[in-house]
Image 1 (cartoon, rainbow over the protein chains, first blue to last red):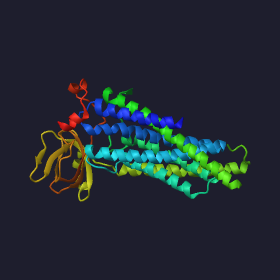
Image 2 (cartoon, rainbow over the protein chains, first blue to last red):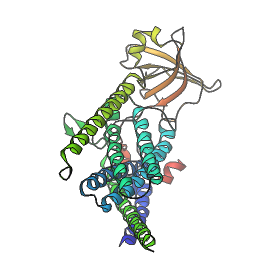
Image 3 (cartoon, one colour):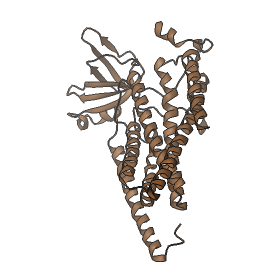
Image 4 (tube, each protein chain N blue to C red):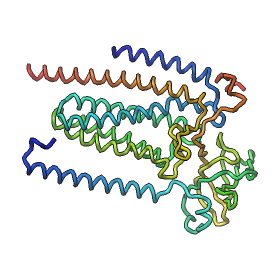
Length: 224
Length: 153
C-alpha cells in the first residue's frame, strides 16, 4: 500500500510537470522563474505539517506514554528537517532571478533557517541519547517548544519589514479572502499541494515502518 | 497526566513548567525586540528626516524606483536612479553593477549601501522586492503559451 503512494506521487508529479511547463501561461512580472512556486510553496506547507505532527506525537507521548507517538514525533521531525531544507534551497533558487540574491537576512528567511536548525538539533540530540523512555520524554519537550517558531515564520512578513513578499494565498482585503493570483496560475498549485501531501504520506509511512522494524529488531537482539 | 503522582511531585512539575514558560517568554520577547529594532530596511522618509543617524554605516533602504529617474550607463556599468515612498521626497542612488532582471521604474527595491555626505546613496547591492501578486497578461490568458516559446522568443 505504501509503495503505491510512492508510484502515485511519481506519476502525479510527472503529469503536473507537463501541466506546469506545457499548459500554464507565463506569469507577467517574473516570467519563467515563477514556476518554482509550484515546488516551493507546497514544500513549505509540508514542513509546517511535519512540525505539527511532531507536536502531535510529542503531546501524545507525554500523555499516553506509548512508543507509537514517539515514533510519529521522531519520523516527522526528520521530515520537517528535510522539507525545511527543500524550502530553503528552492527559495534560494527562486530568489536569485527575482530578488537578485540567493540569500538575505530578513525576518522570513531567518525564521525559516531557524526552524531548519531547530529540527537539525532535535534529530542530532536524539541520536546522542540512549533509546527509550527518557529520550522520548526529552525529545517530546523539545518537539513541542520547536513548534513556536512556525507561527513566527508565518507572521514574519506582516510583523516586520522583509524582502520576502507577504502571503498570496491567504491574502485578505477588508477581511475578505482574496488570493492575489490568477486562478489559471493557482490550479496547478492546488494539484501540487495534493501530490506533495501524498508524497509526504509516502515518506512518513515508510519511515514509521522502518522505525517500528528497528525497535522490533532491538528487542529481539536484547532477548538473545 | 499528573494524577498518578503524589502531590509534592506535581507542584514540582508545575514549578518547572512555570520556569520553562518564563524562559520561553523571555526568548520570545528578545527575539521579537531584536527583530523589531534591527529593522531590515529604512524608508526614504526616515532617512531624509534624520540623515545624521544613518551616515558612515551600511544600511538598507526599501522603496519604489521613482519613474523617469533611471539612467543606465552600460559603458561604465553604472545604474543611477531615485528611490521614493510617496513620489514627494526621494533619495538619489548610484550602483556600480548590472541592472537586476526585474528592475524597472515603479518597482519595489531594497538597496544596501552607504549614504554619502553629498546625500547620494552609494549602493553595494540592489535587490528587487516584488509583490505577492501573480498575474497573467490578458492577451495571454486564452492561449496556452508553452514554456519553450517563452525561452526562444
